[in-house]
Length: 270
Image (cartoon, rainbow, N blue to C red; front, side):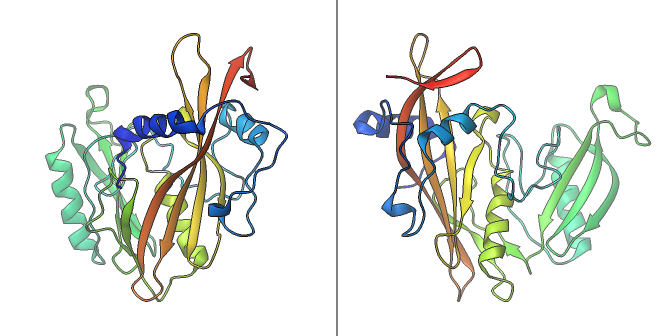
């Protein structure tokens, strides 16, 4: 089954209604067979603390991209909101510039070209977005927009449906492919995936086996006034094929518990 982001909350709600929700023993560290033979899930107490911590988003060793929290940033490759986007790759700077320019012209808010640079993984183009208060303000960039196009020699995301949580996630260069590369690719893309800020909690990121990476996520779901929140613990699993470089993803609800926040202190509901 393929899950889309808009249907995420309803899917998780159905799963919880089938027995996943309820109070939890916060002192119990849980073993989950689907997490991997040697992986022990963090206790619900640990998950609860991180899920409600406004200053927490990802583990200390998580790959953090410099553009992940940039405001007014868009790209034809990744976005930080729910706007439409499509996936392209190119190993040629001139072609990549033409693709980015065409995308810029098609948008409701266009940007003035400022500069570009590249890494071994992508081309990045910087524009001054032409919002009313910023028209002509190129020397002092107050509303920059960033567009990135992966190099095909690193990753080809053609045919990927960004709205789906399951299925094909692109193709990595097999000459570069190892577990560390898959991990960074997975963690990089997570930062450009649309979830509300309160739900973007990565409790852990681990590799259960070679060419596999799992993001352990916590989603705090408001169930209405005078009701406890539901905290859904989800494993988002990525795996790569060593021969083809194809990456696939699977979104799995592990379990749920109910909690509340009072005076800034989270606690389990009984």
